[in-house]
Image (cartoon, rainbow, N blue to C red; front, side, top):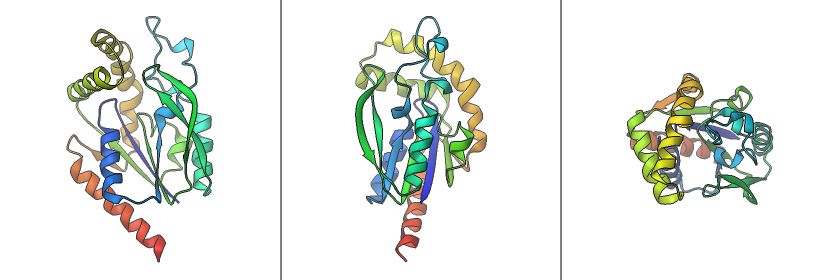
Length: 204
């Protein structure tokens, strides 16, 4: 079992990067776990800023559930991963199966935050993209796909996204084995090649 963690700020392109890798591999033995699915069922009240939930703080996530699922997958078992509703900003009661698999990719803003979870990874990536690019990407994404208003997006960025990134997320870059910039195509080729090699080793 081989686990890869991919972290980076909101709008850094984690999902796009991961999909590039999975498309190049095209192998059902590679599983994917989204950290967003492991937000707590209800955001903690004590994290609120200006009476708005803070989804960009590490304590907004259900670390115990994520860790237990990773350990089960590492043991070769299947888990029922939660499903997150971005329109309602809530974890739903639905689940989706993940595993068993030979290689697992875990992607999310705080994928490298928790030490116990980091220790489960065999390889760690961090996507480092400048703040202006991340904000523009987030703005277009949330307007198009997540039913947000421009006012809400800008307010959330200044209230939580930007300060939490600087305080908690950016420091996790130190734990990465590989740091990827804005141009992710070469890194996707590199990672997909490494995964194909691992799969080939398993076949022998």
